[in-house]
Image (cartoon, rainbow, N blue to C red; front, side, top):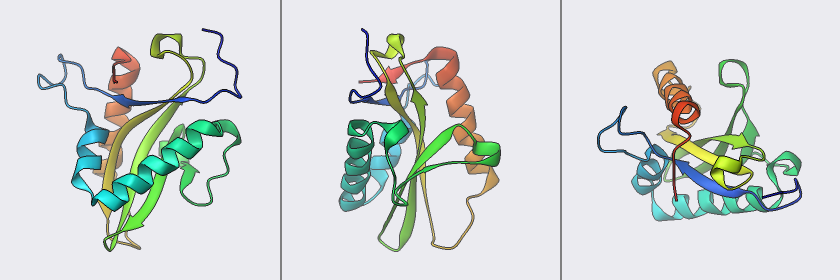
Length: 141
């Protein structure tokens, strides 16, 4: 495939494997369908901008941030709307031939009131889904 780092990255959505979820849910799409359409559109716009930059050289302006501490390795799209803060958690997979090239893999999302902390259980869920993705490397296209 020979993708170069300056090429546009793919945007992919983690799909749960049948062994973990018989319904094979796609958590990030479930999240995007749960937020107001304007919020979902803004999240998609941020993902498109990051994919075109591509991610290693994208300066997020607060809308695309590398996570730290227990969530190191994850990135989040951060959007406000409808009185809530919305987060979409992603992993970056550089030169992922099994995914068709370098990819932003959308794992899961959540909404929370402004100035409140994300509950540790939500981070644990995201990390569990991230581990499932790494185990199965299954995406919805």
